[in-house]
Length: 380
Ligand code: V47
Ligand code: SF4
Image (tube, rainbow, N blue to C red; front, side, top):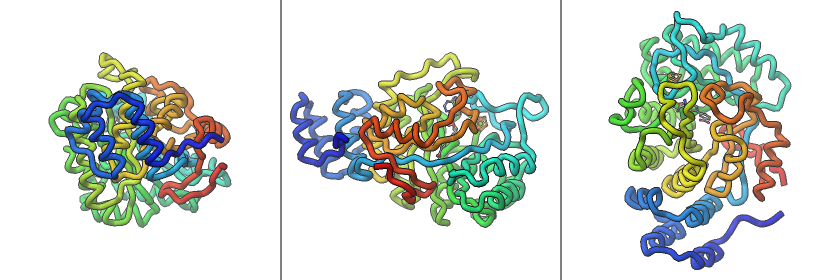
């Protein structure tokens, strides 16, 4: 197999062949020396940096953390309900309780889904959905326990900070109490959803969910309790590059404090069947630039994930040349968020051999991991 990982000397000689501007030379030196990029340097990268420069540097930063490895896991999603109290303008998925057209699985139906995967190779159940007006943390703890009874060895990565905030308030418990109830019931990690763009002015134009401080606070408290979490960023709608950097700066600052984020996941806005359908989707070039800049700016978050269900398999494969080292999971057609928003795959699923082939043909080493990044199998 062609070797991809490159050392510092090789990167310098690659960069020497580019007609770099002074600003780019300074940024390249900082990345090579492991120094942090400033907000203004991030903005420069978004506005001005050449495409190949971003790819070379982001690759270097990725390889410093994970060498040639590209991680994936064997997982399913459970989306217990799409009834939701909130009104996110970018959402194609939620429905209002009482108006029909949605689902709210009973605990017996959830058990049935879990039973279907007994004896399979899955190591993770990712649970997220709408914010149902009637369900509190005790209901969801019951749900986790029932899944764990049937699938004792899987990790439960469950509930966005927004779902947690509502279910804790409904039960009149604090964030710490709520998280320990769920941890006791089998929760391992939190997914990164609900963050959108962590900026209150922009948020008011996008949704009616709680302010960004609450999202950060729930993640902070989870980290303090040993629960690892992810962070997402919904990009490519009405935000400016400055908003993306404000968002990433808030993640970077919290990560300095706690070290609890495992992965950062840029989520490209998909524009079908939602109130923001008038906003055009950004180009694939923009997606790749964004992955690379996330890798360079977030110098303290180990994994940058391309969620293939969000951008399609081919674009996810291309992202492996732009600082991405994780492709998420095999999914088995268990999530509807993106098919309802017009993403490429109507029935998202990958076999392990498809995932391994996709990574190998990008000249990388596929590594199966679990939710907390323990290595399960290396596919040399
Ligand atoms: O918070 C909703 C986003 C998120 C659209 O942590 C949309 O491993 C694009 O967070 N276009 C939920 N995005 C999904 C999520 C996630 C997915 C995979 C892995 C992980 C992880 C987390 O989906 C929401 C919102 O930001 N979303 N609608 C849309 N039209
Ligand atoms: Fe509800 Fe989540 Fe859709 Fe917002 S994105 S309306 S919180 S399901």
